[in-house]
Image (cartoon, rainbow, N blue to C red; front, side):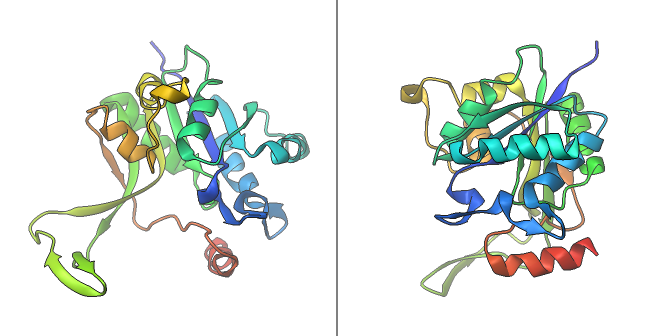
Length: 227
């Protein structure tokens, strides 16, 4: 039986803002908003059949205009999110149809997304239940306090930085981010939320991390990588 996968693009919350009045997803790179690059990647990915976008309430009309301008026909719903990741995730998941098997979660502040990477995480999820883009950390990793090294991580273990996109079973995400706010924990990221469900996670190795736009200074390096 064919398994269905949708995308959930997160463009709301403090992690997706440069400042209180500047939202990363709506800055311009070349001739289009940052969010448009992620939408285009999911549009071009044959493994994704629907897209839900979570944005601030004030930006919903802007996203609708973007969808119409660029012909992003896979977008099924534009959802108003909250200030916290957990609230935004719960709001977005509410609009993922019940017959969808897997959800590929991506942060809009990472515009250098390829359809091929999306497919890799989705195929991993189809085989193993999850697929998380990750980069191996080759350099020594230490713990420190106030600039002083406390310990070095086991040099025999392989350490990875988990990035975006991440594909999970829809039912796992729904359990991690339940609709009632009273039942929902304020996880800092989706990895922590899913690990709390005691789900075995599978990494999809990538050669280099997808840069995240956290400040205006990040725009020039991302533009350089695009070229």
